[in-house]
Image 1: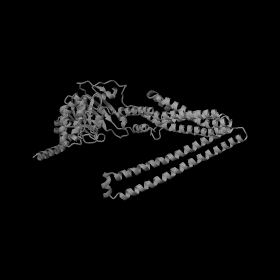
Image 2: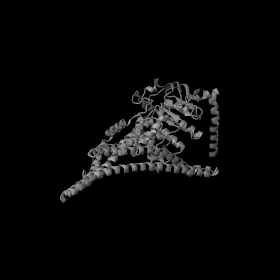
Image 3: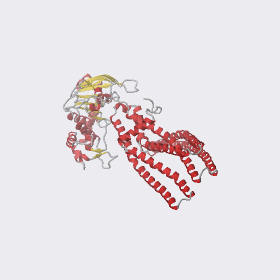
Image 4: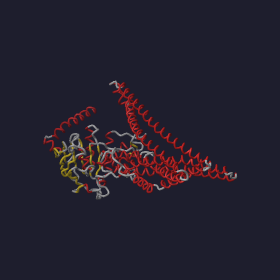
Length: 612
């Protein structure tokens, strides 16, 4: 996909307007009804204000009776009051429907992020579109909600333009052309000035980011030692002052642009007003126009100008908002690599075992110059315990992502019970796996929620059984709220904190709760000391004996109880066999194991010494 900074929006203004109207009609029809109602009241207010003084003045000029004069005043007073009150009521309450429409788009964006093909999450074009889509829905002032104000103003200004045009058509056409031309020139000059101001705004934002970054680092305790040891104070101070001077200069340049644009607009308004004023005065002196009509037409000329500039400004605003809406739509329509709804159904069957096979699989990341994995041929038998080992960066995690269906191979096939997984609904395929990854996730919520991974229909008996099997029952039931105890200090003040080993046991409980036929452990215990890691892997082994299991580690704590060990090196299978056969072969695996075993033995000796 093209660079989004230079890419044109896929959808045009009219297309995006229709899209938003269709969404409002589906999600909250009241949004459209309130817009039309509000416009009706607003136009009424303008007409009441336009005609009130001239009509009342005309009654005085024609010496109408006091009763008729009071009735006229009362008519305009009641009309303005009722129209203004209804308009204010609508303005206060229309936001709720608009928020509903925007929240519907936000939910679609969340669904796209959580369900999109995993490979999309690493695509720069997808990431940029995601940021633009989130920006377009972030606040009430963003495009997906602000567009209703813009459409309201455009409709209002259009109606006002034609109403006032029909009124001014009764006087010299030159006045109309003068009003339209000066308003258009003023708008074009202002639009040009806005482009220049935008350049300065972008520069100002960039400078603010730099200033805030320096301020944040100075206040951050983690930088305090370095600032003192390396005497960074003067350098940071000078850097801050330099950015501050640039910021002041940018503000002055931006304000000068504001001043020139405002001055030009005022001059044009003055010229238009003077010509119109002199022309209308001339008509009054010639007896062609009453004083009341003078007030009416002079007010109409000023109002006519505001309708024109408002309409032109609204078009420019709508164009900008349309671009943001288009990017949000493009994100929602971003093409999927995997099959979802159109894929074959694949229901996991309890008790059934599954065989996974990689046939001549190679994988290369986008923009990479060489393969991460090359020509992998591997069959994982039903119910087999497989250890996948190797140093960091040899492709272990990438291989697991291929097995899990997060990536499709660049070459070759990943097969489940003899069938290419690309034919299946990928979400159904994921249901066959339970995994504990090294970058695992826990949510701020109850322990039961984190085990069940849902708030609805939690099987508490099943949660308790999983917790007990994982060896956490005693710990959890000592807590005041037991299984309802919260995790996540950033959200809950009374949240509990688990140790590293306890966290791993909780993740094991989560894996057991799902009861998936295939379990994958991708270096989840790398942060633990080797002996605790070995004990936890033993626990995993005991509790997953009926499942196909894959253990990934650059440490070899998991290999002794596995049916088979695969040693990866530079993206290829270098050694394969049982733990004992690989030790006997005295190859790379044996070398790594012998080095690591020293640390296990040393730790055991220390623990024995501590006990004595």
